[in-house]
Amino acid sequence: MNKAIRIGTRDSQLALWQAHTVQAKLEQLGYNTEIVAVKSAGDVVLDVPLYEFGITGIFTKTLDVAMIKGEVDIAVHSMKDVPTALPKGIVQAAVLQRANTLDVLVHKGDTSFYNTETTIATGSLRRQAQWLNRYPHHNVTDLRGNVNTRLQKLHDSNWGGAIFAAAGLERLEFLNGETVNSPTFNGIAETLHWMIPAPAQGAMLAVAMENDSYCREALAQLNHEPTQVATFIERQFLKKLEGGCTAPIGALATFLDGEIRFEGVLLSVDGKQKIHIERTLPADADYTDFGNICAQEVLDNGGNELMQQIRTVLNKKEQDDV
View 1 (cartoon, one colour):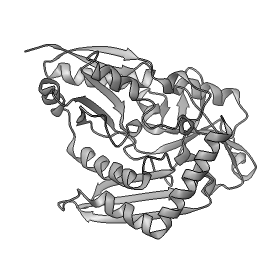
View 2: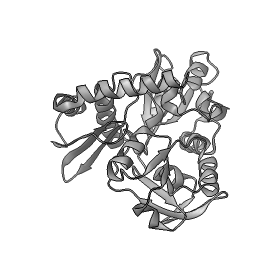
View 3: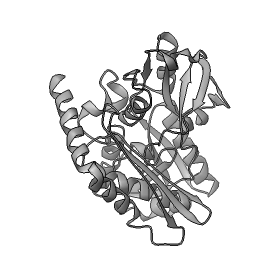
View 4: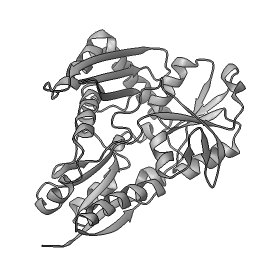
């Protein structure tokens, strides 16, 4: 059997880059493929903050439906956009080797804004909360759209800067060391080493239908085990804390010196409250409950109350916008 594997993807420049990367790897292994691009609700509705959609997986649901309807065979996602619970019948088939996990602040070069009242743009509650925790004298504003659109908005604004995932800028070849050069913006990028990334940031996930052994076997050859383990721990931490609620949560698991090192954080939406955890586990130990253990410690140290507060704040925002 040598059927063409139909690769579903969003139609943004970054999503297409990811899909073409998977396509090239599969074709190197001798598989026939084709790209099928679709537009998600998260790409179409750009004037509403992501958390106000009230659902998880806004960037992945359209592809989920296309897979279930048999319009595509597999789908490729930025793993950080994928809900921790996949739809019935769809399974994780490969986690590709991780790229840069960090966030960067992109700005026009003048750093005087750090000491003044300025606005930082981001569409992420996690980035917003961590920024306000560190710079409480700043304001934040929502930023949506594909990478070029967001960079154009930064160019046209009087914001101090905007926060991006380094991996996305690198994949599009917009980031060169500490400078950003794109069709819509030229400026400076500061790596935010202190900001804990989203769970699975920098990783790409390929999913397939559970009953499609052909595609699952093909994708299994692309799986990178250390990245799979790290993202499993991070997403387990997220799932235990989240309870179905979008929340300012960061998590990063790394392999170093024979250990798995985990760092996680939960913050209030305004950044004023922060619960931080760092733990290690021998690299050869059973990791399958490590994320849960770390999350439970956060919940026991005030996380339950903070999560309830976050739900109340976000529910009020949704009601105010109706």
